[in-house]
Length: 230
Image: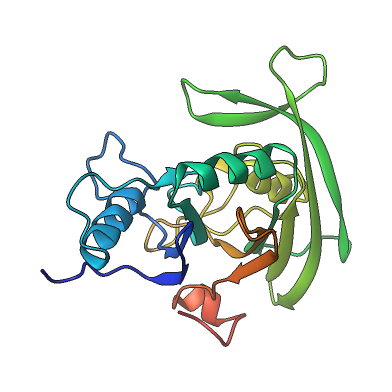
């Protein structure tokens, strides 16, 4: 059987790390489009000649229009321990984002309270008193500036839905392609110029710190700032 194509960054008995393409959902959704979870399971099934159902634990997610490092757990023990790391804030996640405009400072921290309207799938900045509001904290710094655009390094301290997108908007510099949160126009592939470039965590069984990195996609907006692409 031919092994399905999958951009694998790292694998062992407990982890499978892949490069997610923008526009592909992490898990199956109403669109019916192939998901990263389904593709990864098919890849593992063929590679290891698994006769039955393949287990892969989803321990974190990336929004559909976002690209970058995506981790799956290959065992239930790994899934449990990795999920605990995420809950305790022990995982370091780094992103690159290309934004419209240039922030007024070179670095900083965005702290605000967010509320997600699940019916509309939109997140709002609200007061701390709002029922269901959650504190979001994002560290950022300016990497490069070219004309009316900038490349930002973004590090979410918390893990709130859409928090990086809202952090960029609050700086007055919405992400390229992010029509939902202030961008002027869509990108041609309908993605966002947001890329999960690195993920650092403790290996669930070895205990050692591991960092997984992924260069951005080969798209014109990324080539403008980054010489190394997938």
